[in-house]
Image 1 (tube, rainbow, N blue to C red):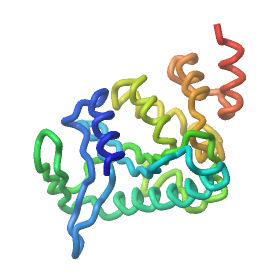
Image 2: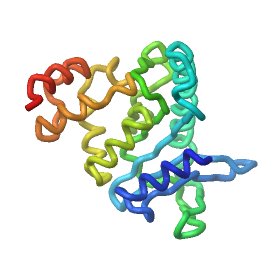
Image 3: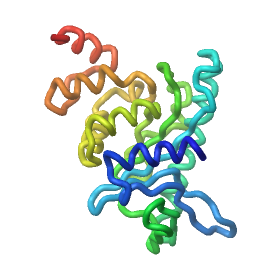
Length: 215
């Protein structure tokens, strides 16, 4: 709960609090959480499911990998479940400024789904590829570490710019799309090339290009 509130407050700075919705709920016999976050502007929607650790530095690399694989699978399942069941049905959340916010028609149009997993090192999730879809019912899904996403949000500042970056990442090889915690060089490549990842073969390729243009 504390980690989610921290992320809510963090995202409320670049994205503006009124557009950041935390812990969306629905009734399906019992009350259930739809997703951790909805970032909703009139023409842009991001749906986020995240998994955090009490102390990301406490696990060995092997245990971190195992934890990240399991949590990414859970987060992806929640995200797909929300995209499948929370459209056309009433959902709501308690907003920190606006109080209860009702969405009687369910989720708005979602341009991108995002799975966030809290790791501080590079983690390859490709052994779980069958459980980690890159799209669901027409909605693209991106996998990132929590720290990388918060950095991207801080640097780009607006949801349309973040969406443009996420869409640019779709040109990467599928295997690169399921590697998290290693975003810096890729993001720098994107900035160096005027907001494009065209011609980038992956994160290792981006690191070489960025190093060559370090000046």
